[in-house]
Each structure stands twice: as C-alpha cells, then as structure tokens.
Amino acid sequence: MATSLAILLPFFLIFNLASSESFIGVNYGQVADNLPPPSATAKLLQSTAIGKVRLYGTDPAIIKALANTGIGIVIGAANGDIPGLASDPNFAKTWVNTNVVPYYPASNIILVTVGNEVITSNDAGLVNQMLPAIQNVQSALDAASLGGKIKVSTVHSMAVLRDSEPPSAGRFHPEYDTVLQGLLSFNNATGSPFAINPYPYFAYRSDPGRADNLAFCLFQPNAGRIDSNTNIKYMNMFDAQVDAVRSALDSLGFKNVEIVVAETGWPYKGDSNEAGPSLENAKAYNGNLIAHLRSMVGTPLMPGKSVDTYLFALYDEDLKPGAASERAFGLFNPDQTMIYDAGLTKQQQTSSPVPVVAPEHIAIFNYKDHAKARYFITEKTKASEQGWSVSLKARCWKRHGD
Image 1 (cartoon, rainbow, N blue to C red):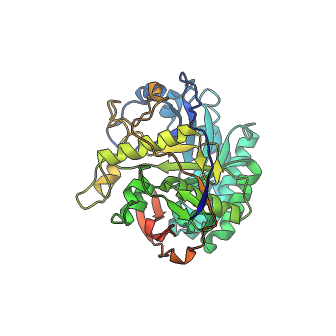
Image 2 (tube, one colour):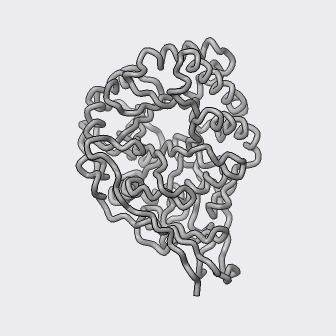
Image 3 (tube, helix red, strand yellow):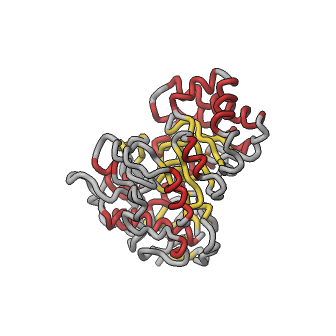
C-alpha cells in the first residue's frame, strides 16, 4: 500500500473585501460591434474583484476611462507593429510616448505585451524581430523614466511546449530554444513575466470521452492524476498545464522567471458538434478557478501563492469568425449584467459560487508498481483566434493504479 504525504496548505482567504484582487484579471477584447462605452466598463470593473485588465491594443478611450481606478492595465503592441518596433528605436520611442507616457501614472499601466503567440505563428520574420522589438520598447520606457515601473514581455501559446505531461516533464520545442533563450534572458534580467495561454477547455475538447476528463478540467471531484516522476497527485488541469510550463522554464535554467496566465476561459455555448461549451461548464470552470486562486494554495510546483490569471473574457466578441464558441467566452453582457455568476463581485470574495475541489498536493512514496502506468502521444489542436493550444490530455498521463 502506498504511503502518502499530503502537503497541507491552508485555504484561508486572505484579501481585502473593500478592494480588488490583484491576481484576478480579465481580457478586454474588442472584436465586437456592441460593446458598452469605456466609462461604463470602468464602473463595472470597479464593482468586481477584478484587479487587472488586459487589452490587446492601446485604445486611448479605455486607458483614460481606467484612470484613477487603481486597476492594473496591460496594453499590447500588435504583431503588425513588431517590424517597426524592432528596426527603428525612434518608432518604439514614439509608440511609448503616444500610448504610455500621456496616461501614466493616472492610468496604472503595468505591462506592455509585444505581440501575441508570435513564436508559434510560423512567421519566421516576426519571430526573429520579436526580441529586438521588446528591447527597443524597454529602452523607450527607460528613456521616459518608466523602465522600473512598467514591464515588457510577450504572450505565448501552449504550443511552445513539446512535452506537457506529466507536468514535471514539461519541455519547450527544441526549435524554439534559441529565441526562447533570448526572450527568457530578457525576462530574467528585467523581472518581466513569461505570459502563457493555458486552456483546459481545449484539452477537454480534444478528448471528451476520457473518463473523469471533464471533472478534471472543471476543478470538480475526480480521481486525480499522478505525475510518476514526482509522485505528485494533480486534481485539476489548470495546475497541470501551468506546472508543465514551470518545468519547461526550469529546464532551461530560468527558475526565477515568473509565470502569468494571460488567457484562460470556457465558452458558455457553442455549435451542436462542439464538445464542452455550456453555461453550466463555463460557470463551473471560471467559478472554481476563481475560488482556487483565492485559496492561495498555488500549484504543486509553485505552492503558497496564486499565479496572476487573466480570465477570457470580459465580454463576448460577436464579430469573431469561426465556431460559435469563439463568440461565447464573455462573463458579462454589453448592458453589464452577468451572463452567469462566476463569483466576481466584491461581496463574493469570501465564498465560491460553485463547489471547488481542494487541490490535493500529495507526494506518494514507495509506489513500486510503475509498470502498470500507460503512455499515449500528445497532439496539437487548433485552439482559437489567439493561436494554437497543446492538449494536456488525460490519456497522456501515467495514472496511479492503471
């Protein structure tokens, strides 16, 4: 019989009821024709526990509307801006002087993301220009005396990982090693985060028939999955995906580079042939994720703190192409009413909207029957308009007792 040791981390909810929670953010996409005025959105955000907002661009009306709210703002330089930012320091200086300097510090800009999922875009030119673009933006911020106040990074798809299961075996694709070494050296030197887009929804969609897979992805009761390398038992897909990224970073020697979850979410409706989208599932995923973040348990490889996480998304984006689910990730309607209750109001900071499964960080010692564990191959699946996502599928795991 296996001897187990539970790493007991308290589930005390340590936060100020009168304030937002800095580790909970939201993505504010604008591929829509029915969005409310930025001023209305600013008021909505102030009524919630959301502490940060990620923009994909630099809409001045939104940045101004968020002034003096204390809400952290992530702004983005588009992929199309990268060539100019990389080749011309003056272009980068103009970009910063136009999109940052006039608004800071009243508008609490905390991070500039240069490009979105560029490495996995198969555009070699952009990939090679990304680091110079980031460096030039950093230099422009430094020149404006903002270098120590506003960080610069980029956002990655989970497809940068070659291996993602078990989490301890997480590794980047070797073909990306050169560019990642440069980017991660920059992250390490400047204290900027490695931003990643993990979506348990896409992991479930790639393998909906696997027993317990939906429950594992939704933080609901399930048998858990054992990482045979570390003997840690994982109770949800989010922790498993984030820890796979942690392992990949550590394997390249960047143990001090922090992870930020730039996007994660679950659609509340979809086409009839899509597995997973439903109001119940979306509420369970986002509600249980929020409760998990509030617990401050962290992940097995990063215990005791919550990874900054930006939910996708604040509103539906009704002009997005593709499957119906692409237009159904929103948390709020254009009239600022909730599409469903994920527990984001400030009054709900001491309770979860749906039952959450406590992460069971368990180390199993003297487990000798590893031969019974099974392996399968991971594949890549098209994820969303934001890019590709690697499926961290249930069937790819070694599982205790199989």
